[in-house]
Length: 57
Image 1: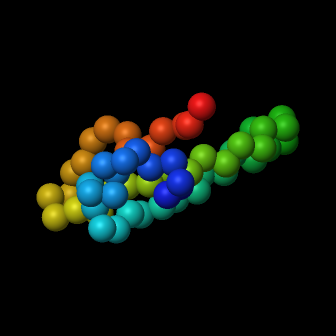
Image 2: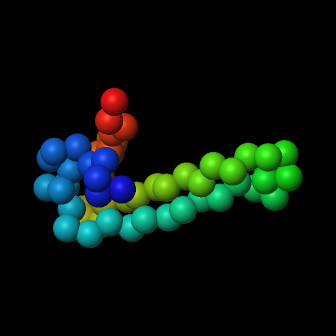
Image 3: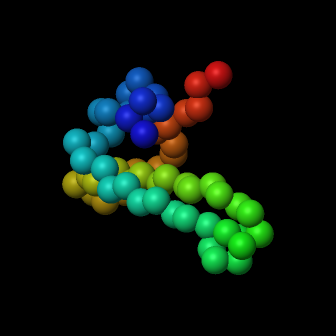
């Protein structure tokens, strides 16, 4: 995820909580093999909005 962070993204927080969300059992049985990565900034005020990551292309 660090490789896709926007230039100022590292200034948002010193720490990030990262979760990986797999497809549900039904989605898996139907052939979906996409894992979603979600990151949340750990900050003093506990609230950051907007994306700090971007797909390069």
